[in-house]
Length: 168
Image (tube, rainbow, N blue to C red; front, top):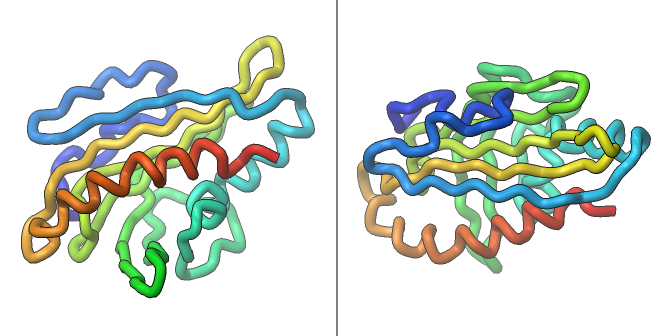
């Protein structure tokens, strides 16, 4: 891992207690996606197989055939026009509860940013389904540090894609 607050996005917790971390930019946003048991089942299955990232234009390698598990390592690839940016990551936490499902991945050495990102679905008592995005980011060590300002400029656009990725 290329950061020191592994697990800090706390996908299993409804309230993000450790949001403020020295040296990291934090982000949290929740959007309503839909409602109903069938929508919940379908959406949570898609989410736990990297659907937020793949539906937002990323490639995931190895291609997910099962739900994510803590400790799994992946290579994400961002497609920026003709440019391909490889992002090594590892699953650091998984939430799999009746009304809360999601995961957090942490960045590994060679990733263009340093930190963690979580995607969490939760279902309310009224049956509505919501997606919460959480992230902690900072500049990495090495040459990618020079590109960090560009990464910050791209983050809002990707977050908008994530928020729409599971809407059917």
